[in-house]
Amino acid sequence: MALRVQKYGGTSVADIQRISRVADRVIKAHEAGDQMVVVLSAMAGVTDKLISLARQAAITPDKRELDVLLATGEQTTAALMAILLKSRGYKARSFLGFQAGIHTDQTPGKARILDIDAQKVKKALDQGHICVVAGFQGADNNGDITTLGRGGSDTSAVAIAASLKADVCEIFTDVDGVYTTDPRICAKARKIDRISYEEMLEMAVLGAKVLQIRSVDFAKKYNIPLHVRSSFNEEDGTMVVNESADMESAVVSGITCDMNETRITLKRVPDQPGISAKIFGPLADAEIMVDMIIQNTRTGGETDLTFTVTKDDFDRALQISEAVAKEVGAEEVLSAKDIAKVSVIGLGMKSHSGVAATMFKALAEENINIRLISTSEIRISCVILAKYAELAVRALHAAFGLDGDN
Image (cartoon, rainbow, N blue to C red; front, top):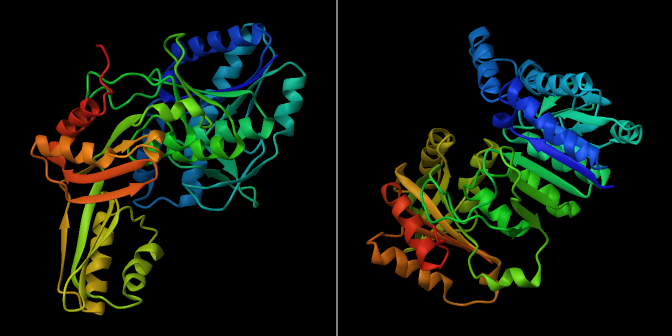
């Protein structure tokens, strides 16, 4: 007997018919002898509709009450699934996030899980129930309902799997695994059978939408195997697991493209101790996440400082940067929205040289100019003009031998 946690996304439970098909899959695993915990997202489109309703009620909805409202999406699918299972003669019980023991901090809309006490779920499993948990939600120390942010159901599932010491956490989506790159951009993309937590984290951070970043971080921390699968077929997907020796045989595992980047440059900043803190401190205070940071030192005690932020944060970041530029005596602030970040990722980069050279050569052959470069132990990222992004992905995919046979 195995203990399996299965998570189903919004498209997998978009209507009663699809919820019924999910129930079929859950029952099949249950009848095979496995203990089953099912974590569900809201039906596709429901969360956006609820946000729209809230904004009709108030231009800026109260954050606490917005969490209460948004949590009803997952509550609906969890209840419907339990109703379906019970109507077919199976023991089932639905749990809201707080009933499943998910305790979070007090940050509305993007709460972080502090701990999980899944004893109620464990007891129900031991009694032979199929446990159905509403994803995306928990409760803080005051008992207030909180939500975990977009993609939070992935995090709910992995956190519950960790608490229960599950054998596997299966993430069912509308794709059948993790691909070497976005198949919509590159027709020769191919499915990866196994990928390490580290590679998956980099891919998630750099634009791959298959898994939510925090869920991969949880899985890595607690060594929970993740199986990314399609809810529309029975095929195996991609296993996300600990690094193993054979994984390093592939120099590059995947190519990502992030179109959500913008660039801000402060020109001729005084090259003095403490200047960077004066620039990035106000951005941190405004909870603006800065990605790439590049400093180009000029002669005469000055430097140009460039960084990237998401499109959502661009306007606020630019406003703050212009105010800070005046304070520190920078010459001007330049910005650009028409950029993209392409990245190559692979464990094999730890032990192979020449990856950067291959990447730069492939881009040069397509006459694509590189604006910014950043690296980690298993990743190289380049900022380029957005209009060349898809061409760059296809060129890099071919250059690193990732093209499939299709």
